[in-house]
Length: 303
Length: 254
Image (cartoon, rainbow over all chains, first blue to last red; front, side):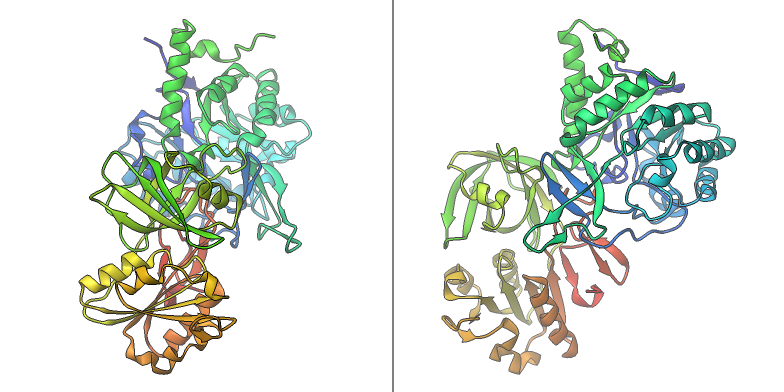
């Protein structure tokens, strides 16, 4: 029997496997394919204070071992989530993490305030790393002072665990991680997508309507692993690692690099059952390696 | 219910140099499929094809547990799917998307271009069951691009336009003489390149004829998780994979 429970800032997850924001809708989209109650957690689609239509089509480009997206935080706003979607999904026995976004600090605060006291929501993901919105988003996550400012402002109004989602599009991710830790973040999740672009040589035009977009999938895994390892050695708060996880072995690598939990992202598009398979594969790895507690893997890299 | 299901390739039937019917068989039952539904097909053993390929269902046989797809080999994914040996394992996510609203005891015109003929056998079968009359109008560049006419003819009258005049009337689909009496029709269904569907829906709307268009936007997931395949509608940006692929043309802001 393997203990798969992990702890993110006092919040117990039944296993380390969660699903990444923007790749799993609100969970409902996967209800036909898997038992959502088995997941450690669900990070739902990014939410903003008001309705956002997102960017124009085309928003997606397939690239070697990955894809670019430029969705641009399309969502119907926090009130619609709380009044219409959340009542449908709160029945699941898994942690639901809203992923919150804003173009100014006040927007983040306003969204966080609406989540205060909502029964069953025990933490939020503060997204300071979306590369696909014109104002805000990644702008907060690529400068230390602004990352600290938005984290502090949300910390002041929200008392449950805050997981700050970091951008890889920075010179030194440990500086940002240390900054948000000092500002009161309970955890950091990393990495969001890498800024990239795709060009159609036949038309000489960019593939995406926004020209640039966020790269995800196995193409970014080595970069993500490196950043998780660097951040693990720089902060004391737990890490939720992600970036191209396609199977249980990838997930274990992220745990060895220092992740307490992991997020499965782009893989959900290709195999809607992959998150559950990854839970099973982590358990099998533990059994095969004589590990009785999955927490033994965290930062267990032998150097 | 949507599911992931394992299939094997029963046969690949090439129709011309660029299009084929891919027939897949399964050990277990095939889910119910509505006209217009599609599947996300995983291209096996193809490291350079990262995402699944969304393909409309062409036909389904519940007695023999087979499902078939009309596919144009136009990209690396569809070329590799066409090169699979019989017996190859393929898994698909299906049934996805909404479906056409077939009318009872009416007169239906089905207009297809390019790969946009795929969903129309199932639609025509259903229309016929509902005592509706079916006329097809297929457009292509040349006669070589016009395929499966005999199959379609089982359920209705097939009209053709080719740009070079090698088969049927010469010109674009919208120049066909059937449009001289367009008000004879109660509904138009269309699938194909966007400019063709836009032109068709414009004619339909100006004649107060209901027009349903099936879109072919690029997709990642196919079931509403990634929000990549959106099209602008009167209700805002909507996913073609879940709110479509079939839209009433009046709802589209293209």
